[in-house]
Amino acid sequence: MASNIKITFLGTGGSVPKPGRGLPALAIHIDEVLNIFDCGEGTQKQLMKSEVSFMDISNIFISHFHADHFLGLPGLLDTLSFSGRTDDLNIYGPEGAIKFVKKITELGYGRLNFNVNIHELEPGKSYNFKKFYIKTLKANHPVPSLSYSIEEMDIIKIDKNLVDKIKFPVYKLEELRNNGELTINDKKYSINDVAMGIKKGRKIVYSGDTRPSESMIEFSKNADVLIHDTTMDSSMEPMVNQYGHTSARQAAIIAKKANVKKLFLFHYSQRFTDLGILLNDAKSEFNNSFLSHELLSYDVPKITKIINLSSR
Image (cartoon, rainbow, N blue to C red; front, top):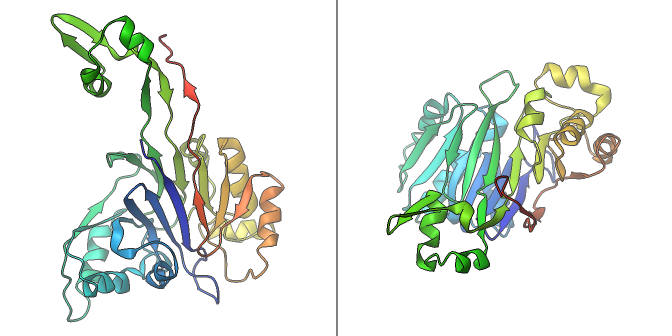
């Protein structure tokens, strides 16, 4: 289980940048692991303005290959190379990622000083990143697109009194926690013998570009943070849905039905200068709605509640 999870919004607009508002990009730190979600044009400049070091990036996840979500990659990769990076970089995305990212790495005459490992992820799958899982959902958008759920691993809390009661060897606790069962001197032990309960991990969902969908409600269920496409206000819903996007009101309904703790509005149309219109639209359905903006950081609170084991 991670100690700290921090979200930094690098770019919050959609389609076209405007002064003070960049194209989609998020940085999510899970302890020392820095993950970038989407990499719109200008992402490297935003990283330089933030407290996030672009040299620390471990993974980049692209939601889809519309230009506003990935055209920051060429410049960022080039800068990493000029800055002396030698560690491998992992880039993940939907169908087409290998083709598109490979072309990006071959642009121009320069060559990168590090390896770029490109992975195509399947919708509806879960991928283990040790301290967290990445789960994917097929987004409702005109091109192959993924929504991402970043889920911190649950941890089983050990009850010291139970350990002492059954005289279980303390140095074997981690092995028991990892395996669930363990046999020592012909005696079989279960994790339930020493467990106090489960401390649930935190969950952050990033929708990418998508129409509203029932599947997103289940995908976002009980998330600590939902960052959802809120391209326009409710007066423009037929048009925004036609082009594969969601209104602020519709995203708030999803957040409410999914029982999320906090909704951040994201991917604003360039036509909006006054984002209060979108915020009011969202708050009419879900009061825990908030505007994201460039360089806003949010530390996801730790979960202290311990859930009793059902078998106890």
